Every structure is written in C-alpha cells, then in structure tokens.
Image 1 (tube, rainbow, N blue to C red):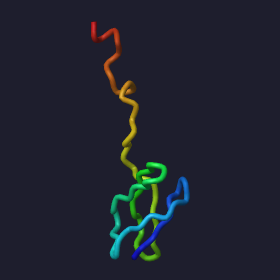
Image 2 (image 1 turned 30 degrees about the horizontal axis):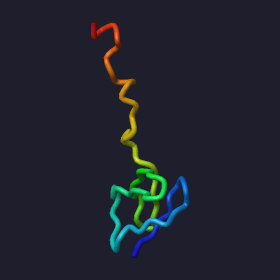
Image 3 (image 1 turned 30 degrees about the vertical axis):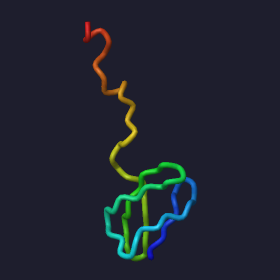
Image 4 (image 1 turned 120 degrees about the vertical axis):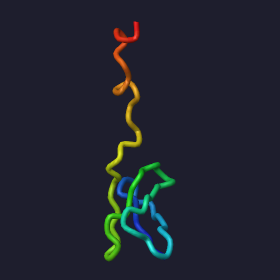
Length: 66
C-alpha cells in the first residue's frame, strides 16, 4: 500500500496499491486537495485547479446589476 504525507498538516494519506500520476488526493484531516505528481519515488503536490475561489471575485459588479 502506497503512503504519502499531507504537505500542510503531515497526516498520513493512503493512496491504494498502485497510485498513478494525476491521481487526486484529499487530506481528511485538514481538507487540502493534492495530487500525485510522481510515482517512483512517490511524490504529491498541491493541485493546480482553483477549488476554493471566492465567488465575489468572479461576480458581476453591483453597478452592472442595476
């Protein structure tokens, strides 16, 4: 079983028997989204996609709604 450690809190994360590059990894302890970037040796990194984007940044300006 492959094991990695969260980059934020250090919690052990089990990745299954055969992890693959791009495999999404989620830390149950702190909620960090990670992904497998290398298989041998096993390496994980933060994901590139923005999951927690503040919706107000992408919203229409208030003056445009009136």
